[in-house]
Image (cartoon, rainbow, N blue to C red; front, side):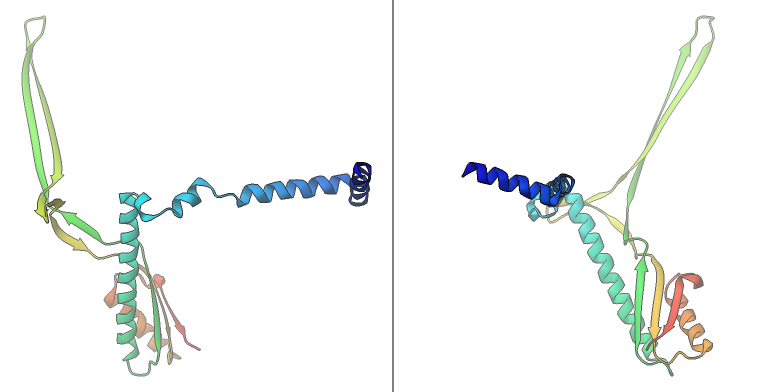
Length: 196
């Protein structure tokens, strides 16, 4: 029985060829290696308790950016679709940064002057100064948080408008001017296209 098994293996190898068999085995090994979960994948699939504070903050920032963009897109679509001669409108915004919160800073500086005598009988004065700023903290719900004095909205990087009824260059120009009135975007970063 064992001899028949060895003969069958030899015949199989001869039929396929040794080089092809080696390639098939190596391909199988590579598939196994690539299908194993990596540390990165297991971290991404981990539960929320394993996420770091920075990861949660960046996720919240991305969510806030998405919500801001969506809100601005909807408002822009509404205003543009109400213009005479323009029908249905779709708008897409890209943002270059998230909202920024500017906190109140408490500046502190220290200076120190010392007088030293040198060996030749003269004196020398040394002055050292340090300055630094720290965020002013306030207590809210038993937790100390920075005191926010200003919130800057996310920066709009580019705008795409797809609209019905913009056959003329005049309508495109009006849309571009309206976008520039709403957002600080350069003309070459605004694209207006006719909807099917």
